[in-house]
Image 1 (tube, rainbow, N blue to C red):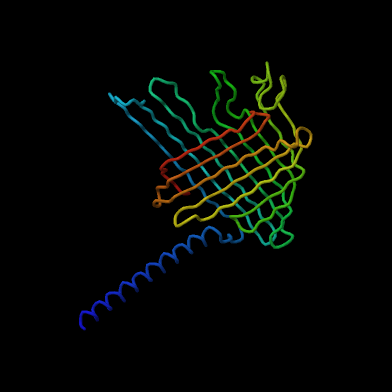
Image 2: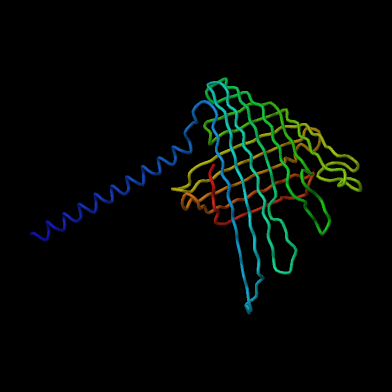
Length: 293
């Protein structure tokens, strides 16, 4: 009888501990979700994140084969947003640069981008806004194709801007539709002397298009300490091949290890038939060192 009582007591203690652990986990998950989805207070808010990812492989007398290599990637994300009862202004600067060095080969870049997005909205219902957006996209360093220089700092530059309407459920879920969008492509004259470049005709330095743009942003919690961010931009040129929609999609998955370490997966694909007849893709996986500011 005494053994039965002890056994029941142990089972009760285990059950209580399991319930407490489950409750703690549930509370922690709800707290993370709340931090992601909660609306920011009125006024300015600022948030920045810098991440460095490095990979190294060393082979000495390795009979199975392999090449010593090193690669590194640094990325920056900075948000500065303003909110009031009737106005919403979201600004985001992102930049990244990566290199790889394989033994006995030239240094090559694996990532090179700088982008600035600005979206201003004037509320007219609970979730709808009149909007105006501006997008800037370019690069830092020279690019080569088959040994020929095809791009350099701020060449090309892609600009998009125009009025529209914004549907915003929260800071983590919004869609902007701009049916009267201007798109400008700027290229240095050195790259158009003998042929076109990035859709800019030979002998020119600028290409102008008029069309429609749709952009979407969605961020969610996949599980505890794992967030997924989706960024989609679509554009159609009214005056030329409107059915050929330009696509720019980015997926970022961050798995937080602790305050300073994050496992990162980034995937981006771009389709722009004026620049390249096919999909451009980049993919980065690694353990990153973070600095929040």
